[in-house]
Image 1: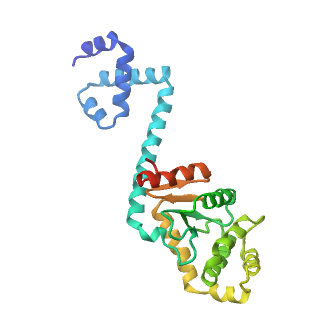
Image 2: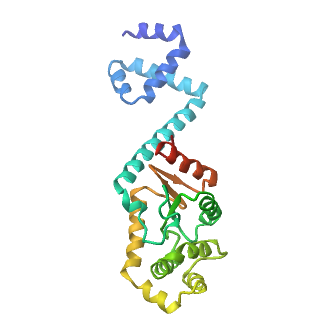
Image 3: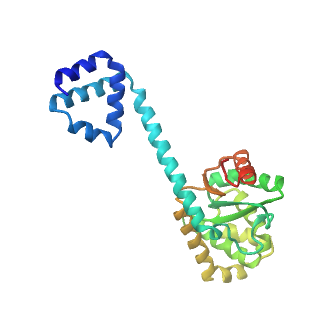
Length: 264
């Protein structure tokens, strides 16, 4: 195409051609091929048209950024779904007696949490309400103490308590997560003693390799799922990030029953 012919096409209808130029600019597979067929004046003119279009329509950049973010989110969701499928029983496993709600429930909700996570504390009432309202729901708790040494210490006590008194783990969890102030070793031991487990027994269990193994395993699972904050939930084939609220979680639980997926 000659430079004169190129100018003629540009002058016929500038807006559609600018849009086409922008599309070519943003479409990486197309641009190198188009550029290869142009001489330097044509390339310069194309760059000018793209610049002019963007200056007249800056909202296009926001649309492109939104599209890119949506594409990345969709890709991450696909990767997470694949990771969930590969982990299968590991993800929903918990020692006997430690599942919250119905241990034989038809839907399992997995929660990754930290005892010092403010959003986890806020979401506790949502979780309690979900279990109370849904007799077929099974909840599995995965402790990932990511907020410092106090959280690690609290989880060590928690997991020791889970080993010694599995049937009361849910009660311990609610009391420690629901308490005011920082959760650390002392406060966690205080909660455990209030539920009838002696400090000496706890300290013996805290030294068990199984406690560190449980923390390491939960951290491994969260890394494979790209869990980057607490609380995070796994329902069916999806990772749900953040304290999204009871209604959002309940809707996904119902979807699992309707179509065997978190989003039908």
